[in-house]
Every structure is written in C-alpha cells, then in structure tokens.
Length: 320
Image (cartoon, rainbow, N blue to C red; front, side, top):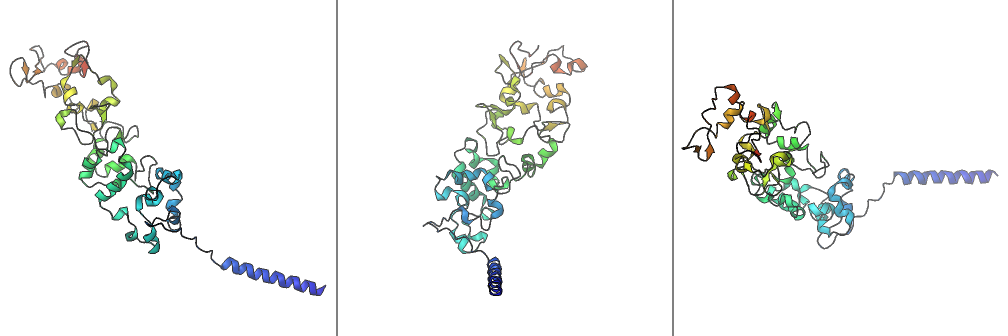
C-alpha cells in the first residue's frame, strides 16, 4: 500500500516537471513557405511581423486578390503591390529590402505601380496628365491603403480634409455665408471634381478650372444637381452655354446670395451688357433700352423681370 502511494507520488512529480518544461519551451516559429523562382513567398509569410496590417486586411478592397484564389503571385495580396518578399524575409526586415516600398518611391513610380491594376478604370484615364500628377502629388499623398480613415476610397483623412491640406483658400471659401455644404457633409469635393484628372474642356473657352468633372457627355457639372438649368432651351443665355456657370457664380462660396460674384444683380449684368461695341448690340450682347434707368431701384434687380435668366422656352428676353 505504501509502495503504491510512493510510486503514484513519483509519477505525479515527474509529470509536473515535464509540464513546466513544456510550458517554458517557446513554440517553434511557423515555417516560411518556400519561395518560387521569382521570390514570391505568399502573404501568409507577412502576417508574422505585420500582424496589425494583416488582421484588418480582410476588410480592404485589395483583399479580393487573395480571396479569389485565381490571381498570379505578382498580383496577389501583399506581394501584388510590394513585390516578391523573399529578400525582405531573408534580411529580417528593413524598408530597403522591399522591392516596392512606397514610402521610398518617387511619385511617378508610385503612380505606375497603382496603374498596374487601376488603369482600366474610366475615371482614371486622364491621371497621367492631371494637375495632381504634374505637381508630383502621388496616390499615397491622399490614400492610405493599410490605415485608411474612410472605408470609401481608402483615404488618409476625411475627403474634404485631404483636399484642404493643399487647397487652403478653398477651405476659407467654404466658411463664407453662402456656400455649397461640403463642411456639413451634404456633398463632397469629388461630386464636382475628379482628382484623377478630367477630359478636355467643353465650355468657358477651354479655360475652366482644372479637374472639374463633366455631367453626361460634355456638360457643366452643375447640372448634375441643378437639372432645371440644364436645357436645351429655345432661347439660350449664351454665357451659360459657352462660358459656364462660373461667369456669374462663385462655386465654392460667396458673401453674396445665390453665390453671385457681385453683391447687386445689375452690376453683374453690366459686366457684359455695358454698351461696349457699336450698334444695337455690343459684340453681339444686347444693350439696355432707354427706359432702363439704373438709378431706379426697380431696374437694379434685373431678375425681377428676367426671371428665366438661365434660358427660356417662351421669351427671348427671359421673361416669365
């Protein structure tokens, strides 16, 4: 009886020692997948060190290259953007061992890498000649692939804050009494602008602001929302059709009602209808008749009578 108890105690003691030794022994590192001839090792090798990135990568649009399972190694997961990982793993890390380390690359190289996949998107066909590209604004200047602030577009910050980083004067315009409600979140900069570049201008004599998008095929972007101003009209107001809405309006913000460029309506109209030129029209612009006494307040608000100032289907003088 005593001998059996001693043997049981000895066995328990030995098991305790083995368990403690097993607990202190670190687990063997996960084996690195074998690299192929080009040095691709697969994205699973990246998760060992970059766990913070890999843990949320499944929510990233780029994860579909992994999820599909039918993409070639050079277009799959981490190595689809950063290149083969073999040399990086063998060197035990370091940015300089990453074939495509975006923080070390030139804006042109970053653009070329991104266009490997994104060149097929229609809204990016003009990116190589856009104002952003010409001024060395790279994709990574606005986008954060691994740590985006917004799920949509993978932007580094809220869209308006990204744009305000460079366009400080536009931020000030959106603080004016009358403005488009971008700061309130009602709309975004990309509702009117294409940050990746736009097509050739079709209004304002080719001198429209850079990267303004187009509605439909070749119309000013304003008519995407202001559809009642779109036309075509039987009687067109030429500046609207030829020079665009910016002739009379400040699109971002203004101190004047209706985003007008002038505080009083008739002073805005007189920029064109001012009697310049000869005959009954000045360079094709109709002049005011003699009964328009502009010292009389009732003639200082032209749109009181000319209510269809953007174009009319009933009256050539844009009256009701």
